[in-house]
Length: 369
Image (cartoon, rainbow, N blue to C red):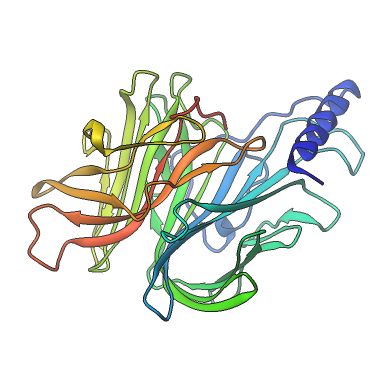
């Protein structure tokens, strides 16, 4: 069924539920002091409005080609249908997309899925990661290994992702504020430096790939300040084993409403960063990229600046491919999600580097979750 028809179908279901008297139920709220508990919190949190399992990573072929990928699963609770006994009531909606970055192609290859939870065709299990969406899947086994399988019209991925480091609890022990009000927050943890192995299939030909990835786990019911139009986020696996996270939430004038992040050393020393500790300055006009499809302009070449105990440190970010716009309409937003190389300014030659992903939302239209 075409995606547009699916979206109309789900809209019709929502309207039917409202007409049948199904009322909105209160959403669970993010609270400080609630401990992240693993493996339980690898699984779904259906009482919250939205959450995601966000995998991004760099891949390398046997010929030494650099590629990158994104596999993301979203779960959304519309807030209607809870009291409706019908199995067709859309109590939970699952949405997923996958993208491949190949500089030889020059733009993202992308596919997506969307469905209401149920009937064994779409589900996000509680207690541990086990997500099914049609023929796409993301699972975590007892050893801690993640596996994902996705197939689009242009490519397929069958990957294993092995943790090499403990989970990184973002914010205050997993309570990550996203705005000036305490309820504008998420529960948030990351798994950097995932070791990747598996197969990329293109034009029917399987290619063995290896690499490194990053998994973000986040859930919330009230994530953004009403004035927010989007955010800039970057996560980098540093070459020395450290991990860098930074984000800035922007208003309609491009000014920061909130900022945060973290810097964890290879030894495991963690510095939590607040609004005064993170800067992602807007770059010069020549460092923006404008989409030939949507007309949106994105600041894709830029720097990220973090305040540490030793003073400010700065990394320059260079995209693997400027055209990394992901158009997930009509089920999702249009945004830029691209692989970047990071290099610390002032670092000795051959040090201070890393690879990660930069995410830029709200540049075409305000982001609606």
